[in-house]
Length: 210
Image (cartoon, rainbow, N blue to C red; front, side, top):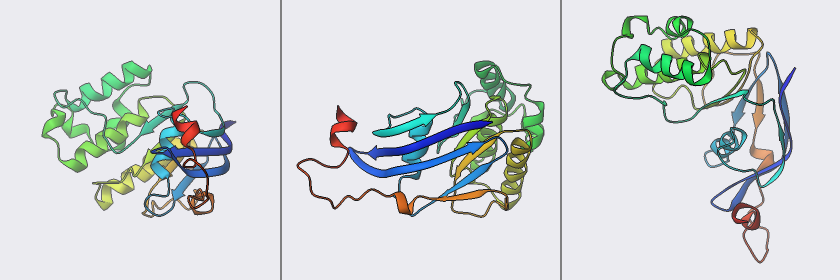
């Protein structure tokens, strides 16, 4: 089953196109690693696919309520405990029980700890565990391993592999090797917009501010 299909997509940041003419698709069981230098549009693309900003051209097709997005913020409520945070997100999305997510990201001994008392790495693990309780099949992940040590990166990779094995899919922006040889590579460099072209307005200005 195709979980997302992108055709001739262009996205903009600050009124200027950063990516254009992008085509790709993801089916259940597949993962793509987004690569490209800083500023190449990885975060902008993920935010566009997640519906947080409009595309300036092209088409995005995916089933409704299929996407879970994890950006640079961990998406936690500081005053709630680890288990309360996961239970909150499970109730919002109508997802599964939180037990498997606690185990997957090694959080079982921290269930009663308020989120504001966690280390940066523990908060990141909790933020990633949140993906499992959404019940959403398509994960869009922006630098998910920030603040994680090598053991936690391995936990995340195992969680992601289990998600793929269950028929899910993932698009992951990362600069590190996740140890997922089965993942494909989507290098955004060939799709970078030509910002040197001459026009009476910046490329993408009319679409972004219409």
